[in-house]
Image (cartoon, rainbow over all chains, first blue to last red; front, side, top):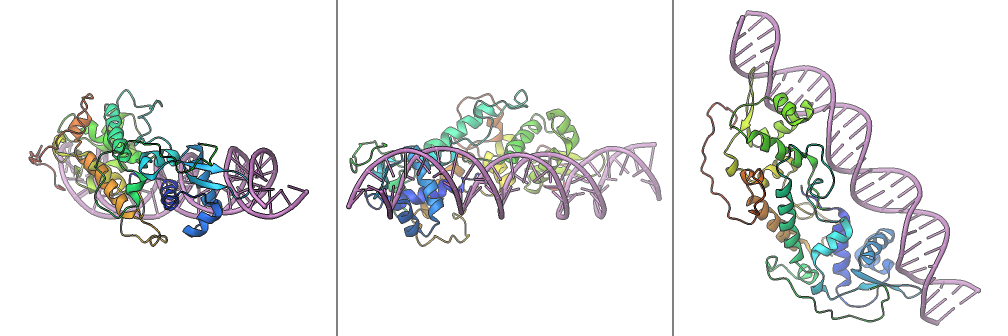
Length: 155
Length: 155
DNA sequence: CTAACTAGGACTAAACTAGTCCCAGTTAGG
DNA sequence: CCTAACTGGGACTAGTTTAGTCCTAGTTAG
């Protein structure tokens, strides 16, 4: 199946929801807007915040906002934040595999991981929320650090 | 993590093992050669046989063999055989998602699936067992149906 | 000072995965 | 024709992972 966890999926949707404006939204507000449980959305936003994909504003009237412009956030970043590094097999990292001596395929898995990572880096959140126009293989946007607001602390 | 099941990984290794020659090997023989449990390898070979990636020979002195030349078998086929269709999210198929009305990202996930599928189709088993030479993005081999043997029935 | 938030992590139930086993069918060879 | 060596298919189980909830602490607006 080559599966992504549900969290990566949810994370993308939460990001998509937040991308509609640059404003601060509380977790419960996002949850209500998306029709999901507040505690679940809260957990997802925390994970996204830890990786600086959203910025958090603490205290009353606080909440979360995108830390960058949607076109400067790649799907690879979101997936990495939610699921950890993109790697199709266990052995492709540093971990030891008991059959490593037999295994002739290891370096090639790494190549495959790299291709997938590349493909995901080329898709921005902005593209992801547009109606489909087959832009997946298009050129990667260069970051331009257009801050949406300066209110956030944790960026 | 974008994980593949262990079966896809094992499947690849079993295929790699069988690719060393065109001969018939019993499941237990392959298991012994790879240092894995016979029952596990047997299960994997059954799955591969059901998708016609290996051909089975029943009865005494039976076993399995690759159904095609390694260069005519793609990684996409092996992964599909072991894990089912390559699809990064649940909703990208036909299944209904409760938030489909909110979800603006669906068609774009399908594009991403397609890119990954493409990348995996371009890697043949033959390439996978060669020492790494960064051939992942190279052109896809055209099938030439060079039968290795005519002994098999289930091809 | 209090209500409305986020931060972090512990905890649990459900789902999935990996691995084993069993029984039925097929074939080579004595 | 019988038996041993195989595959085919599927049931079953233990272990792991995932998803989701909840609790406590810290921060800030008003």
